[in-house]
Amino acid sequence: MILHEIQAEGMALNEAFLVAVIIEKLSNGWKDVKNYLKHKRKEMSVEELVVDSGLRRIIERKEGVPPQ
Image (spheres, one colour):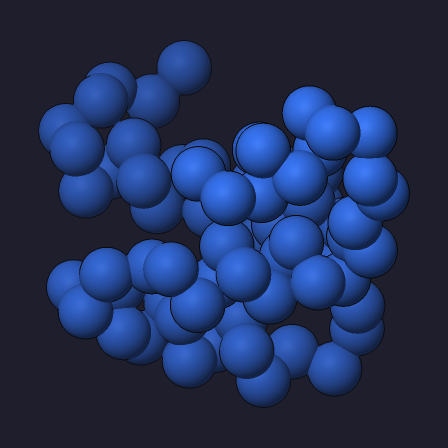
């Protein structure tokens, strides 16, 4: 992944940019989630994207992982 290579070189990446890239890379099967996340008004960190937005639960549900 290009982002990983950039970070490995010691270059800093803006967290808002990282969040936007992650959202943009979601597949077409995630269209509704992607649209929702793209139009949220509050900026999110990567951690908030995964934890607070409920994305982790959505991913687990889609992949059939039982809730903890």
